[in-house]
Image (tube, rainbow, N blue to C red; front, side, top):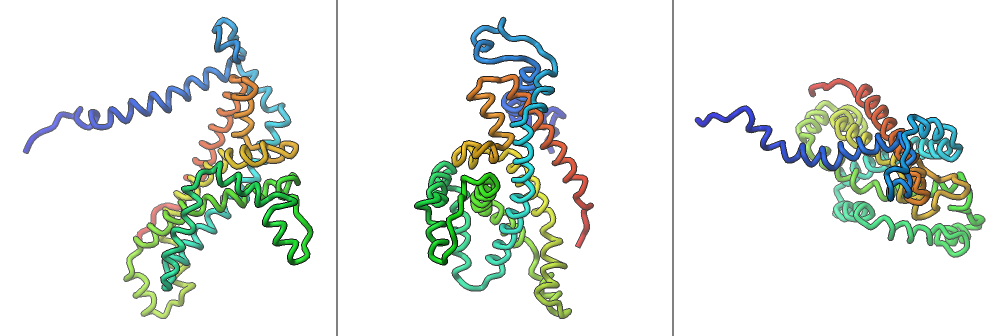
Length: 294
């Protein structure tokens, strides 16, 4: 049997580590350095215009009312969006997995299609659906005598409208993850439970949900991170309005970095978001129960 050098594993993981360092770690380090400067377009043209200002960007950003409002909006998105995505994805996956009719197979494609459709195209279509005068939703409400709803014009309703669109888009990918996990559960568990007289509810709560805990944990982590970085829907549909009521932290960072050219200020905001994601992810890991054998 051939013997391998201790350095052999490093040769395999080396390229991946180099790419990770170049395209992930190095940009993060650069952004951290930028966040302590006042770099703008003039600074990009001539580095002598850049000044080191310490933590001034961080102090100012927490006094910025728009940034504070964007934090509140992002919390709103996370609190309502994450549970909705997980519940809808899991519910649909259960229905498709345990459904016996042939039409349930077609539902996989129906629910997966939104997740592979371009977000800009989807957002434009939904903007027309939400149109207060000519939109389909208000037209249907008018048929049953309900007055028109300002879907994207009212500050609170606009957030709900964006959440509805984002949930509709997010169901497909998460449904596939849950379906894969469901099909990995041995049928013998259900057969044994049925022999013991367990009804469908007992099988769901005592077998299915516990054995899906890793899939649920993975979906909750990735969904939470996605909603904290919520950007495309408010950017395309509302531009953060009305009155910044739909501005997320990611959209706030984009505005300051790419529209106002306050790169240092935007980098400080991105690091606040970065640290928030790390803290929330660590909390979720701590809350995850220890592995249990079944």
